[in-house]
Structure formats: structure tokens, C-alpha cells
Image 1 (tube, rainbow, N blue to C red):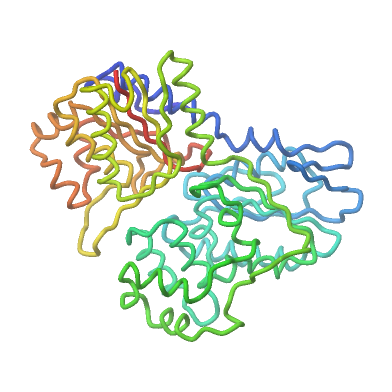
Image 2: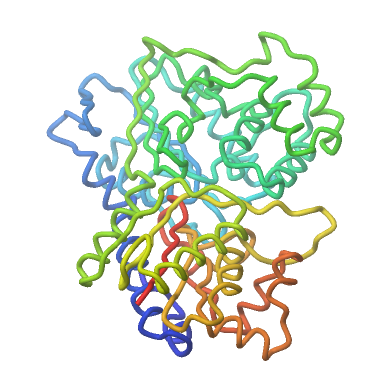
Length: 451
């Protein structure tokens, strides 16, 4: 995978550090390619299907179905179709806009992300149709990756689809982390929180996923079919924590305020024919970056694979560590590369009309701390190629970022307060264009090159 605007990004500022950062990014993204990972972990030997440590006798299987959704689902589906070919009876997956490519046995449909639309709802209904066809001698592959909540949505009875969309929009701008967001989504969804399993059983379920969750918890990544430990009350508490309880539609507030056993998500699938395999772990992205740094003859320091705070604060914090390294050699001796992964958040007030994303805000905030340091580069990007609602993957920053922005009339601090960093970073030439589809979707990658 190549960064499309490499020439622009390396034409100014600390060029050597920028080139190193882009080389590391491209190498790391190749290492988390779901297509290659699926081909390596799913194998067909005669009539025996091997999926990770599991094996299945296809001689006893009548039909194989494939359903799924997510930003990294297409490459898994492509690999599965190449492996199983005409053994696949039927399938459908939902991908985000500009990811659609034809497959022979599996239908590919586009839908909206991060706020769902009617296209995704239609895909979800088709998933239900396929699930309910499956019998005890069938296998259903569930290819679930990041973004599935928006790309394949269906509200529970009593909540209009329009109201579910409002909740999605409120959650993604609230500052809540992905697990908190999904705690609410699960209880408003007819497919999440393990609810799809009741439609598929007694067929065998095989989950394949790419982790975009800090900690690589398999259940959080495959929550269409795995048991849900959260409750309706947990969902209420998340909404209240982020001051959304009074903002959500009446239908949602009423539904959550009247708990009952029938409304709760399934809590236990012990003994059921349910198997899960993680094709790519999120921490692999950071580990691959460290491997590339070592190959370059530099010292990597993997600070964390669970970065998860307000982006503006994360950027200034990381840049302050880089300054200390440069000035004193503590806590690390330069030259070195600091590496972090995870998923930072941005809390946006409804009155703010800015344009940006978490990784762009991280880079812009780092620029405030780096204006007097010419041999440090901070780079942050979303592995799926789109940072927030923008078409850019993220951004990089060094001392030239603040200087150029100021010369062009931007107040870097003000753009951060207004959550409007994209126009500024476009003018400074610091936005990362990786294309709308990198083919993967693990967590974000943050690098700090200190030379």
C-alpha cells in the first residue's frame, strides 16, 4: 500500500524524518493486510476446512453461506471465495462507499459510514434472510470488521430507523470510546449483541474478524454472534455519562427506560456451534512498525497499543515527550522512533461546524509543541484510510507546520478549539492521502521520529 501524496508530504519541513515515517507506515499497513492473513489461516485440505486451530469436515456440510460487514470485510470475503469457490451457496457483505468490487459467489453492497443509511438497512434484512435459511448441516461465515454497526444496521422493534441514526451521530461525536459506543448500539440493534446467532442456529457459525478494538477482545469484534456481557442499564449509564440522555429521541429513551428480559441481549452461547478466529490483531500494526524501524537501524520504543484519549491532549503529550528526548536524552536516547497505537477520540459540541478527524487533531496539536524543534516529526493516521468524516487518513507535523500555518493566516490553537483542522493542514501540505480504501482496518498508528 502506497501513500498517494508522498511527494507533497516530503517536499517541505524535516524531509528525512517525513520519508522515514511514510516508509514505516507503508510497511506496517502491508503487514496487516486481511486478504493475505486470511489466506494464511484458512486452508482447504481435501474436504477438511482448517480455520486457525479449528477443523471442519465439509463432507458433512450441505450449504456454506457468507454474511458480513465492515471496512476490512471485502478482502476477507475475496480470500474465502478463492478458497471455497463453488462450495459457497450464497452470501452478502456491506462495505463503505468506494470499496465495492465484484465477487462471483458473494454479493457486495455499499452503505454509509459512520452514520447508517437505508442501503445498510436493506443489506441487514438480506443477512437475516440468509441466516434463517441455514440448517443444522450448514456453515455460516460471519465476516465482521470495524464499521459493521453503521454499514449493516437494523433497529429493534419500537425504534424508528431515523431515531437510530440520530443516536449513531450523537455517539460518534460524544468523546465516548468504541466499547462504550457499542454498549449502546448493541441494545438498540436487532443484529448486534449476539442477536444474529438466534437466527442462524442450529447452523455452525464461523466468525472471521480484523480487530479494531484496543486489547483485541474477540467478543467485542464479533458482536453480531457472540454473547453480550453488557445490559440495558449499562447503555443508559453511557448515555448519561456523556450528557446524551436528554438529547436522544424519545423512542430510544422510552425503550431503554423500560427494561425486561425479552429486551436483553443473549448472555451465554456455551455448547453452541460457534467458532471465532481473529485474522489480524490490532497490535500487529505497531509491532510491524517497530520491526521496520529496527530494519532502518533506528531504535523503536513502543509506548502503548491502547492510546485512547482526547486527540488534542494525546498530540501535545507525545510531542512533549519528544522534546524531552531531544533536549535531555530522557527517557530515551535519540535517534529513535516512538510508536503508539489505539483509537483516540474527539468530543464535538453540536454547535461546532468544523471539519477534521482525531488523527489530524493529534498532528495539529503536536505542531504547537514542535515549532522550535526542526528534527522531530509526529505522524498519525487511521489504518482504514479515512480519518473521521474526511477523505484523508491523518496528518503529519513538524516545525514547518506551525510556521506555514501562521504565515497563511491560521491560528493553530483556534483551529483545534473549533475542530476545523483539515483546511489548515491542507494549506500546509501535511494531510496524508492513502486513498479511500487501504484494504484493512485495525487501530490508528502514531509515530514520532526523533533524529
